[in-house]
Image (tube, rainbow, N blue to C red):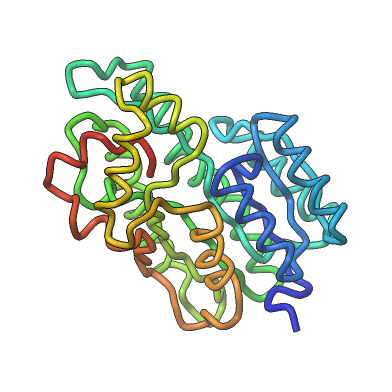
Length: 269
């Protein structure tokens, strides 16, 4: 029996990286998936691939910075699949900037996407989950939401705020009336094509990346599937008693890197 059979999931940032891997995994577990993304071609491709493999998925364009767009994404999910059981707030950006380099525009952009967007989506998803007896909200966070890094000021603040939002909603919604669980997942360092390009632009070559991988607790970078496995579990009824939890799925990275020079080289979550 598929763990998510009959459930409906909305995944933001579902066109690439962790969001794409998560969309695939939730669909494989039997969920009907709404792949929400700002980038149409990638999101549409993710949904089409799921359908080609026998799953149920549609693409929904969304700019999470806009409240109305988030409201529409939730409405479309309910219209297409009849309800909403799982919300995965994955969409996020992580440009580097130290305090003095952080402009007002950059601050607003990071906070809007990484924190305000999840707030909007929770705001409109909760009533739909409540109507059908409960649900699961999974916020994709970061080790920097716990400890911060000098060159990720706005990003760290946004992920710290997302953690506080998670805990607040877990308390507010963890009752017999709402039955909505809210959790915070910390993925590790995912080495995507974008990540490789950015590290290269900053003067770090393939040998540097290999050396870093060897120093990671598990000896390798993470894949989107690593995060997707945990998210699928939290979305399922197997996690019925888990809420308000910070689930650290970073392969021990935070244990070794918080407060060290390595924090300044991390581009990913």
